[in-house]
Image (cartoon, rainbow, N blue to C red):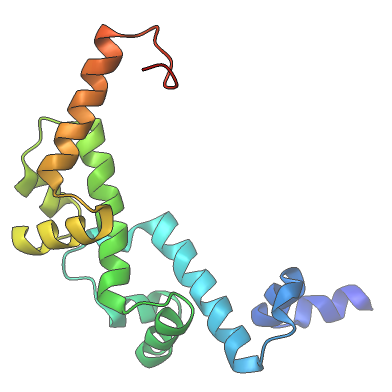
Length: 158
């Protein structure tokens, strides 16, 4: 009988059982946290942020919710707005692209990461990584040169 009842539970109830620390929260806050968890999973698995035209309506369709509720979840749980939230994923992806292929042009990195303009890419990158993309490229390059010429030195050695 228990198994039958458990199968009939809503997804939100099953998730709240899994994450017992959500029980002290109000029902609305609990739902927002669960929705944000779904959003995080979609962002990591499907990487929709790589589409330059990706918007909150698209994300709402993906998580089967309304755009205002998705926006509220990102604002309340993620502590940011939709655009900076999406751009943070884009910047992480761009940093990974730069690390994998340092010879790529920054305009290519920006477009492959989902940015529609180079100035937006530069300002988002600088706000997230505390350096410009070109400076990040120089850091990556200097690290690889250091490893090439000093392979036996440990990081703790000067």
